[in-house]
Length: 258
Ligand code: HH2
Image 1 (cartoon, rainbow, N blue to C red):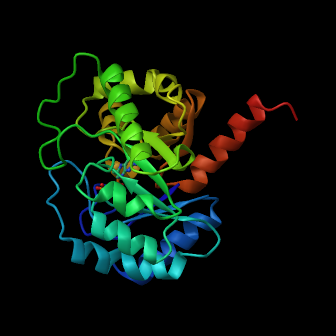
Image 2 (cartoon, protein in one colour):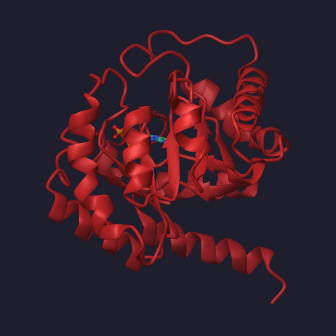
């Protein structure tokens, strides 16, 4: 899954693809590099980010979605707002990627009636404050229970289980130690029975480990992506598709029997 941030303030590429034509060209480049899905977002969720009104978010993503929907790969829309979900589905989105796991009132209903996939992500708190001393007694257990509960709520709202993807939400209300525990135990999430999406690309934990700024975390991101796949991740949300693809080919070569 290649990331297309149509935002002025995303943590690693804010402002680069705010213009619709630049975002569309970037998305097409990611598809050429081997993305199977593109994930289009109009609101940054970096720690401390201010919320964006639904109308602004839609203004940003609509032209990009219109240009890409029905094209070579399915388009996912990264949003937590039911009104944006509904409009995005009307414009041809194939997946709703909700960092809030459909907790907003009306969000399950916005998705239930449409033939789209949904990603339910774990987040502690909200982006504005989520990195203020997050604490867990058992981070893996708590994330698993949360995702199991949100998946059950989605099914109860009429979303078929085979439309659901789950995600531990690396960096969303988590310290470096929490992210490590979750990556180590990703197979526990996979055991819930839903495909697992992992988003570690360029994240600050990788900066803490390597001492590198967001623009220089390609090697660390690719390493984290491979570790996630080995532990059961089925979808990787990444900014750098070409490098990740090459690494996956090597992994497939080692694991395969051809
Ligand atoms: N991470 C980000 C945004 N959306 N969605 C899912 N399902 N999982 C993630 O890990 C995830 C996500 C943050 O990355 P990015 O979009 O590059 O930054 P920003 O939120 O600043 O736009």
